[in-house]
Image (cartoon, rainbow, N blue to C red):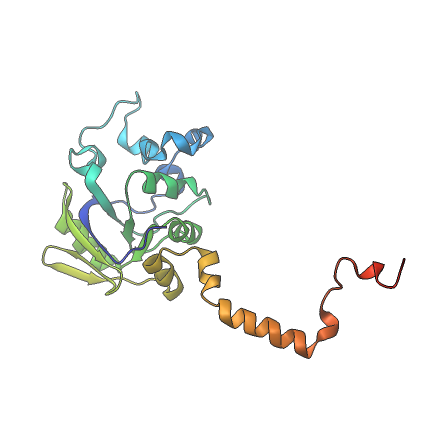
Length: 212
């Protein structure tokens, strides 16, 4: 994954609560391989009318929205089913961070594992950011080192698990998190083998020793 420190980009406001994973990517699109690009399916039923025509006033259809890397929304973002494709849709559409007062637990975990920052702010601060962005994409800065989100004169703190913060700052996955303890693991394995030599498995050809 790409390391993240500061994201300075355009941000878009999605002033809705309970944006669930079926809204983020409707189930009917999950039969498609990811190679087609899941970004085209992001929020599809909110972006289009019943006839499948784009809603011109929807924020993601704004001419500048394609440059946005940050989305600000309301509470309970990513609730619903555990489909990781919801995160794929956001990432494939260019988003690197979603700011909201709360997230679905599985969605947040999937987000971090795919390099997408789920930044948790208070409901009051979310409303400030939404108001500052308004109905058009606007400049926004997300500082993962300082744990702040800023739009113009509005700057608010956000929270994130320290482990998730470490993963995103370094672009690490779970295997990388384990590898940072390689020396300690090797030391433990050596000491354990010396203390409990009887616990080590026999070599594959042990049964042949003394025969022939």
